[in-house]
Image 1: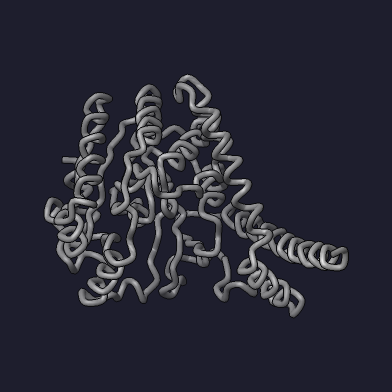
Image 2 (image 1 turned 180 degrees about the vertical axis):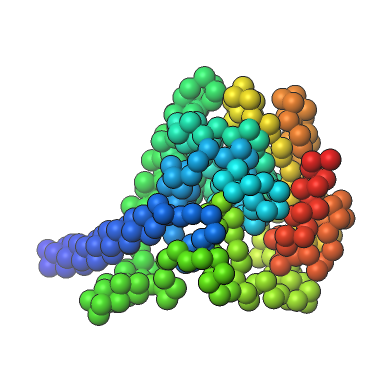
Length: 362
């Protein structure tokens, strides 16, 4: 029995050691990438953004930029919104979108803006209906755990601090379990082998560097205003290719089919908007448009149509009560946007976004 226990302990210890070392190396590399943003200026783009932790990047960028007049919050569906589309001067707009953003991401970013004295005049919110799904795990926002917990503990949050702290503990446990994951061990071993061979970026090929926008050469990149430039392969999606992606989204997407309303998260959004309105911020919110194929499927299925309607009704009521503006653009015909104005099932092209902005400001 003792040899077995000793062997098991050695194996577990080795796994913890390899995963822990690789995690530390990745953290150091990510810190280096974050430092790149310090010299980020209009006219430049950050190439290799997909390999940067987006929430840490946004926290760092907010420290570096001047106070913007207009800020956009949301997921990848808002990230193409840029200074030119809004008709603003350089430095007046910042896109604070992050992948799979949820209400707590908005709160964390807003708290950082207040702490930095960079409260905007106007805030756009691109809200996905699935953020109100209690059954959908949403943990990435815990990168802003301290900011969210502080907001919920204050007068704006009206309590909720304990639940936020419990979520933080869950997040720590989630990451601790990764140290004992075999799949993580395989990736860690690959990273360490690359390091020993002198390959400082063994887990990706595209360097994280700043270049003039004209030199991005069709690569995915982020502008100084936080807006996303898709790589050339995505920009060249045909209508048929967008349909393929839309069909895949419908097949793979479970964000709305198993839905239970998250009253706590809805309450947090209400508290956020109330705090922003007290600070004099104009709040403009919308449900972003879907590809026509996706919209027909979602609106024709009671499992998905009902959650979207519930989200719309909640947002309409809260916006009206707080003097905010809300528009539901889920149906692309309401913008209107045609099939050719989508990259895939959920991401609209700039032309569609421009028409949507015109509707929002009319």
